[in-house]
Image (cartoon, rainbow, N blue to C red; front, side, top):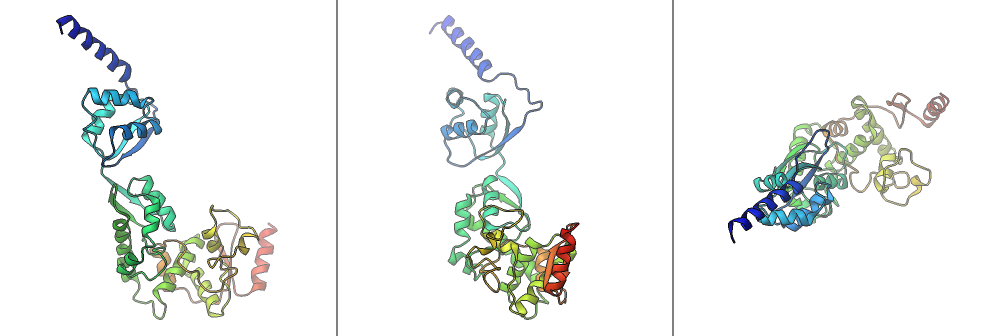
Length: 321
């Protein structure tokens, strides 16, 4: 190849680079999070970048990745790119490697499925694999959980996870944190079983609006259990619905499920969420009351009643305002 041909190809490459990797202007651009897993190929990465609106043409991306030698240098990790990022900048970033750790905060009251979705969104593990692992009897027994699944025992907290973990590792970490917290607060649990405490705590977590009301709400559930009265917790019905409803219908309260505490007496088969420390304390040491009913007041707090007549009277007054 003579000098003119070499110069021609160099100029052509420079022009193509300018077309494919033009000037970047990130002002006002929304950034997209992309998680690249180990063993993903350049082709898979290109499609993922396209799906997230970061590149328009995966073939162009792959062409330059191969020409410039980046196709074998892509590293796993968490990345953030603007939608107008230059291909060359993307390739350089992918070759350097992204964040392989994520600080995840699990909110109080999240269910197994919600936690699984959060973990999947952050690249920790797949939701389906996580949900399945939460029902692994061998794993549960090794963690001293004697329930159908790990619901209630995945302590809501902030965790520093690496991406692409085995679900088992995530579950073990969260359950160990649960037992650590539980051991700190359970000295006064008296006659209550751990199973009962965690189930009551999960109900309290979903029903309570104010921290001060948690032990009172716990007392209502214990009082109802004592007199063999259905718990009639809306939260247990919400647990079996595919989507959350602001207000349950009469038909919802008639759904035939052992979790429906309007129809089935006693506690639900498992906890209905993963309660935080305050809800666990409330379930361990409830306020001593004679309340059997509670209802939401207009200010968001709860009104408590000892009998049905008082409860109905409050509802009439509330609904007339």
